[in-house]
Image (cartoon, rainbow, N blue to C red):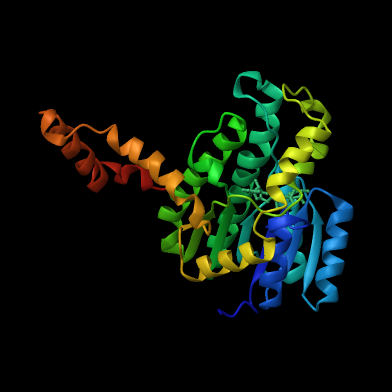
Length: 300
Ligand SMILES: NC(=O)c1ccc[n+]([C@@H]2O[C@H](COP(=O)([O-])OP(=O)(O)OC[C@H]3O[C@@H](n4cnc5c(N)ncnc54)[C@H](O)[C@@H]3O)[C@@H](O)[C@H]2O)c1
């Protein structure tokens, strides 16, 4: 196991489920933990539990959708620890289920705001600080298996989770030159409290097209209660980060599903020799990558 005693790990959604699991596992390995979560009481409880285990833990109530608050949280970490975050874990997320054709603007706005914009806010706030600090750092974002394919019952969630997979690919390509490793986790089911996420829905995004009642909650609970425990998932995340894996998907039982989707995509490509202009297009792209794109790397 790597030495985490110099690490400051900032975990969004750190008060519950997959976030709290990482707090325990990385905290036990020596990292100082910042629990950043929208629920104040849950933050305090999480910090108390971690501290009782001897883990260095600091709590910040943060709504990751609030950019000014995110900046203030990053400043607070630097004040408290005297240096910046070395491991950013974008774990906070919410979901709500219902048919795509009944999805309202409020369903889209809330779910995409937390699951995509919240991650973007983390990246824009923290990445420049990591680059400036100039020490090796890591970023891990919790997406979902739902981000690797469409979903008729969780369309906004799948779209946001697909976007963060793609976003982490872009950051991974760009940040390795600064010694910053980027990973994205695509879990299937986790034993967590995400079935309660709708309690966190803001009042200005309350107009949902989905059915939410005891039966819908129980239906979700039936999946999550059999999920991977947050601590086991966190151990997989730790192993993946240490192996510098871009994708961390510790659910072998779901491989076939993803394989079928990617095979369908690959089958959509015609054979090269059926299109005489294909080589010309390919050359244009290659040349642009080698030379033409340089202009975009210049300082503004
Ligand atoms: N539970 C699953 O089966 C499952 C499967 C795949 C992916 N995931 C993903 O795992 C991640 C963790 O979720 P979980 O299952 O542990 O759920 P959870 O509800 O137990 O934990 C999520 C935490 O995020 C916090 N949160 C929600 N909105 C926030 C906001 N705007 N700002 C800050 N904190 C906020 C909540 O208060 C909660 O403590 C999420 O990104 C989720 O989408 C979960």
